[in-house]
Image (cartoon, rainbow, N blue to C red; front, side, top):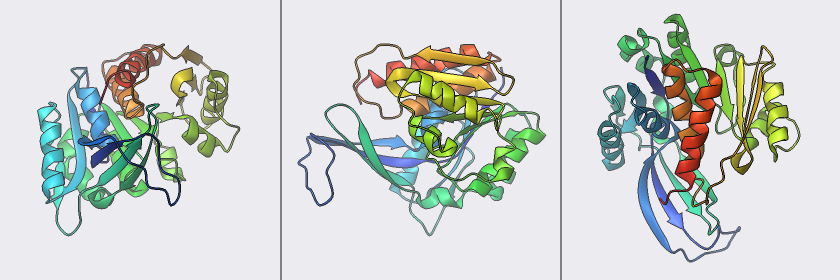
Length: 288
């Protein structure tokens, strides 16, 4: 078993439940709200650690109440939090997510301290990177920071997973360092500039296009399932498990974190996807 290193975002989330998401200029009366530690990086680190794989989180928080809670949350989940940098002069990352009665949501993030991540954090965690393993990246931190971390992991002989969320243009330098790309339907559409991905066949088609650039392409299609295509031509399409949906929040992060952990255990991509798919199904059927 090797390690998982998550290099990425930490956000303090405020979750709001209401009858629906407001339209422009509309005020909606909510039902309840609660705080939750999040950020794609933070979520993925905790998901990986739950599987028993040694997991470390590299991130940046501010010297504020949100930051202190975020660091403590990682430590309590048995994630190595020694390399979460505390910085002054900017607030910690945060988000507000509004859920409707169907369990779907929309969110706004304020990146804050996450934008400070970079080469200095890679160098500070040199002892971690020297051990190799599986590195998980996302698009909630600067592209240059992702490149620096990916270069360090590749130099140590490890693998790089990019959860390209939210979708944005990627530098060629980063694209060349990614071993596994993981995207959802919307991100797949934006990255491939292809047709709408609203079926499992559509996800498979998008994965084929992404596999022209990346060694392994994984496209999650929500309630339809997940598709995977490798540059060598192997294909996999797994229907979604049937569960009672409570909330889709965090499902992609759960999938990515467990996928990374399974790969760190030495599992093949098919077995890793099956485990990640089951973990995401369990999460979306549990109340938050």
